[in-house]
Image (cartoon, rainbow, N blue to C red; front, side, top):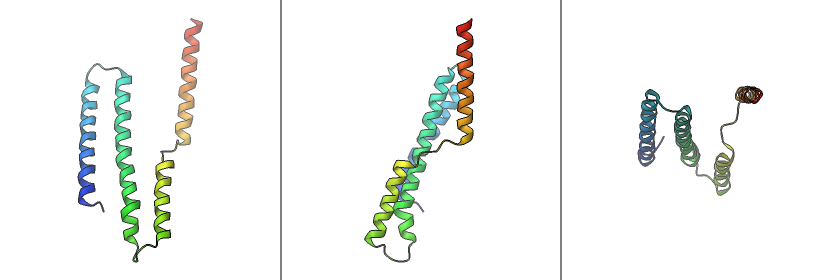
Length: 120
């Protein structure tokens, strides 16, 4: 479970994200470029992922060691720290096969559109 100081920090960040989402909602009702909307959506997604990452790191640093019934030896603590570093380095959201297929389809559509315009 999150300690009160971690809860406060995360709550503040989530409130900022909530404000971003409300701003995005207003943008949708206004005449805006799709690219502007997509930029804001990406910012919200990134902010939420950052909050999730922070909770994951907290879990590895605090919750996992506390779950052991005995004090961790230095070697065990080093392994947990190593695992956290691996999370930082490699735990980016992997591209799913479906999204790759969709990306390929989109780029084919784009190439076709560009090719069609060149021919015109």
